[in-house]
Image (cartoon, rainbow, N blue to C red; front, side):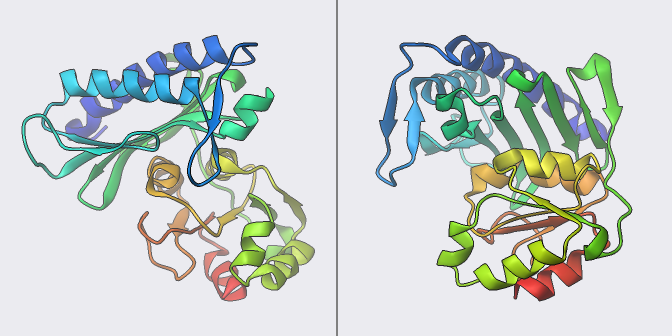
Length: 264
């Protein structure tokens, strides 16, 4: 592992242990409290509790790093401005979480400037984690002691590809529904796994494409190192790499340009 990120990745696992305990204790709880945010998306008391706990740990262990989280926004580092920022989605897949569907995860990323350099996705209800650090490769397993390297597929044709997406209404809203439907029709197989899960299946080589038309930084920052360190390509719809474009096209790299061309 690149020595400069070893401690950060270890901390990400500690943060994930904390998140897993809180989120699993509240998963399918009869007294789970759910509210609607101003954008009409749901937030549970578990989302908020996870983010508060992770922020508290980061404040103690990384006082020089700022934090951005979905529920509580951006906070500057206690020790003053720096170029490192932790980005947290306490529960990615809250709609699944509140309905009792086990496909949800805590997303933890470390960014240096505009580049995500560490990413960890922990899905405790599935009993699985995925993680990567820049220059280190990507891994999956229940924990670090049971980790296996992961790699994207070798599929080279859309007609042989397993195509994954989140849902269709967003593509209709962006005026790209017809090219999306064409891709779905021409792919070997298509499924709407949604949220983090499609990207992790891509990194493992189980699917070949995952696309979303609209994303926030906390939705995507942790995913990029995992996909790219597994050998994949991750851009926005315009083809720009990195997390700032507000959309995502992730592939095994071999069919990336064709997917971009078709969606544009």
